[in-house]
Length: 437
Ligand code: DLL
Image (tube, rainbow, N blue to C red; front, side, top):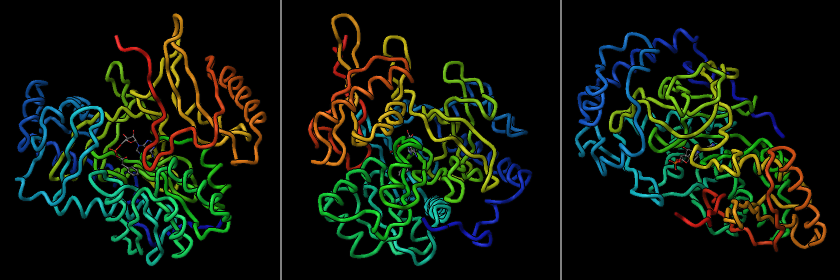
């Protein structure tokens, strides 16, 4: 793999500024953001008043803990445009969550917001090793989802040549990567695995592909998956994180030279970790729920938004800005099986250690005689090469590993190749077939 470390002189100076400098930018911007939300969004005025706090009460960054949280339900209650802090005419772009679990969440951006978004995504792409003039194959979905268009903004800001291919039509993805010679690919890690399968299908060697870096996010993935993908394509694999409510992709980014967690672009997004049960703010280093406050957003300021993502905050390394550890999962994705908490990423980690099984998986929950049962659907590795009996032995090995490392009994099935549904975006890791009562 090539060394893709960016030159220090190419970075935005704030990325490597002193902590004091960063804190002073944060404090000034946080005061502005709280005032902006309070003055222009009725929801925030009401919530702050009810909590007995006023933006002027913020004297230091830690005073933020006096302010109330914002949760997804607040956004739903204000559907569609009630959380906007500028007249609708000043909103140049709208994105929305898919709304599969309820009403869609709508977010908006002014011209300045789009410029800032482009800047943080450009920083992220540069941190991944992309340089002006490089070619980017952008396979995140274009549309209401922030992935495709968000990455596109940053690619334009950095001066890349962008292939706006979006998700799907996997044969064509492979063809264009090969014919055009993209250096970078932006895609969900699960869809990258489908692209990898397609390389095998077409008899092409992924190691010989022009790709030098994959920029993976929009869903949790493990370091074990990183090794799998890096090895298969002989390219770097780095993590990009974000969520629509905070801006979209580009809230935080892993640096290609260290691959040690994701630097949060703290001059735009202020992070806190809280105990999800008590709401108390945790110390850096403690595992908890990630909470964000936007510092510069005009159209859709967001104050202490509970992301439901679990991680911890760590000091800066390649950049001065703090890092977040790779996300373990969302509080809503946590499975409680007979009293044991399990995240799909823990299953992924174990699956990657069984060579006879492919990296695709899906977890199904059912009700057994009395207790909940977990079945993990997997497939033989390397279509047609690994015998079914070998894969079945691999499935049993995986069940033993899961028992030993996580402490739960799961049934592991190695079905036929293609049995596990393939994603073209975010993978669906969990199917809950337990009766609803
Ligand atoms: O997924 C934005 C995005 C697009 C990020 C492309 C990175 C790349 P939403 O659809 O609003 O936005 O979903 C946000 O996805 O709260 C996390 O639970 C999850 N997520 C996003 N990035 C990561 C990541 C986009 N790198 C939700 N690791 C977030 C783990 C991630 N989970």
